[in-house]
Length: 209
Image (cartoon, rainbow, N blue to C red):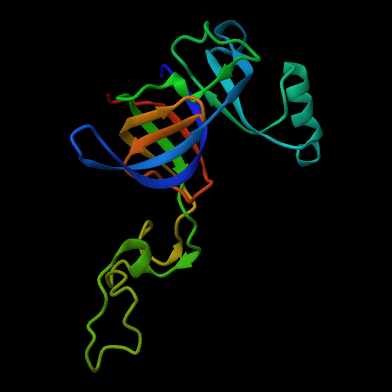
């Protein structure tokens, strides 16, 4: 990983390129992020930088969290994320990372938390086929069919059933950065990213580009 940043999902819109083609994009308020901690190979066994994003009041942090920021001498931040960069020598504690770290045309991976949908049935959760909508089959049609066989007389692990759906971390790979607004710290990436509006996302350069 060469670069990374923390951002907040603003929403989706569309941009037109020079030839008039419409490009659906997701706008992300990326940074500014402050370097709150720096890990070194000599002390920690690996190299990484910890970025802080979005100012927060002191009353919303624990005593340990406040001490962490005071030790670094940086402003209090609500979100922290560690990025293992290939070269951390260019960044020091207190430095700012902004949206212009990336450029138009870059390929990035975006990680976010999907919308939580609560406890849902197997039809919605796994897109299973409904039962026949005819007489004699019922009274419930939106349920799973056979759960297994007679021998062994049990349900196997990992069977697709009803349960918690959504609210999980998902990464979308190889999204193209369409436009950068350095003044407003905005990044527009082509396509959709996980999560609801105002959700926190992590952007890094693509591992497959």
